[in-house]
Structures are given as structure tokens and as C-alpha cells.
Image (cartoon, rainbow, N blue to C red):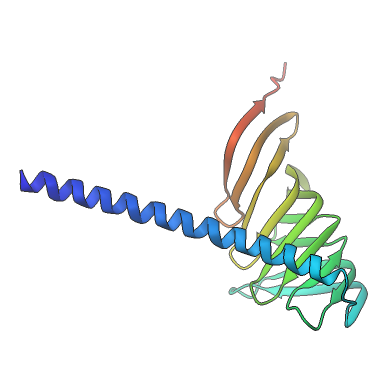
Length: 193
């Protein structure tokens, strides 16, 4: 009987630790979004200390591979560590055949946190050997370019050719090529004749 109690205790402990980890990850993501929203609302009265027009930021991961953020306009604020970007276009080449691109109406680039929060008509694509593989459309997407993780709580539409999926929320890894749809998942598959 004590052996069964030890196993139950271990399973309960593992479940509690997993729930705490999930809770902590959600709090961190919500804090990132709140910090950005607070900075945006406070920056509406503060003028930028510097800005760039038609500029490119080069980002390097731990393997030395480069990604790029092209900005129509980029605003720097002396009281904040993030950079506000108009019409950002992010591109990353995982290898010589696979390329990821993301675009939006606006973005907040956080160099310290190594994240890019895209807002408004967000469009993400994977292109392999010059052929469009899939497209994700949403209103807001958080990209951690160092880890290759993407996430959103907003509605997403994923299309691949004539096939499509919709869902509320997404967590994806460009490195592991995994995609988790969080809730209200609906799909449309078109059979070819």
C-alpha cells in the first residue's frame, strides 16, 4: 500500500509542477503584452528621441544565422528600451531552402528581450524552395526570434493551398516545426479530383 501512495504522490507532484510552469509562462507572456501596451500609451505624449526611415536591423541567433527586420520607420524613445516600428517585415532563413517572413502594420522590437510584437494585419509565411507552403493571418503575434517561438491569443487563420484552419490562439516553433492551436479549432479540407 505505501508503494501506491508514493506513486500517487509523485504523479500529483508532477501535475502540480506542470500547472505552475504553464501558469508562469502565461503570466510572463501577459506581462510582455501589458508592458508594451503601457509603453505605447505613455509614448503617445512623448516624442521620439530619434528615428530611422527605410532601415534594416540585422539580428543573429546563437548559431550566427542572420534574420532581418525591415522598417518603413523606426522610432527610438529615451525613456524606453523598445523600438516602435511602422510596417515591419521580418525575414529569417532557417537553411538554404526554408524561409520565414512576417509582416504587420506596426511592431514593437525589444532588443533586450529579443522579441518582436507585431500588431495589425499580421501575415506570417513559410516559403520552401521558392514555393509558398503556409500562411498565418492574425491581428497580433509575439515572436521570440532567438528561440523561434511565435504565440498569440487572437483568432488565427492558417491556409495551405486550398485547405484552411481557424482557431483562437496559437503557439508555434519555427525550429521544431510544431504548431499548437489553443481553442475553437475549425478546419476546411478540399479534396482534389
